[in-house]
Length: 168
Image (tube, rainbow, N blue to C red; front, side, top):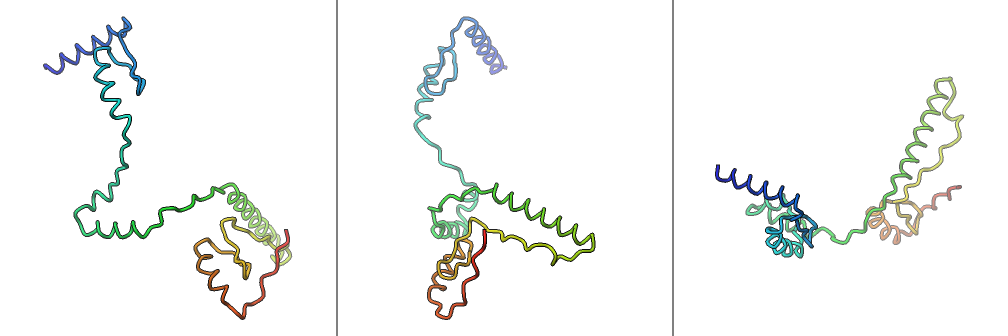
């Protein structure tokens, strides 16, 4: 009950200080404290403002002291650290998705009326902006596949003709 009474005393002091305007503001974090407590808080707050906390990695902490720790260190060395940020082209992907749904609906309508799919005009090609074009054969690949393909394609002697250019 000793802790309970001291908490009540602090609460009543805070309430009376708030009424009298005895609150001071910390220059570091902007929080308000009783003037009697402000000095102590400011000294602690000034120390904590200068340091950044390291992000806690729970998987690394769980693996500490086990065989898994060596594996994780090996994997972290293997991973490239400077990956370029991925472009966010969700709007373009969304438009392609909507277009595909409309084309599928159109095909269903033709089939339900007894028509042939061959009567429909050909579908326009869908181009993924994330793909990289090979300078030798002009085919398009995902970035990692392009890294593998382009050196091989460069050395091919009997290359088939490039695909026809698409009309826009």
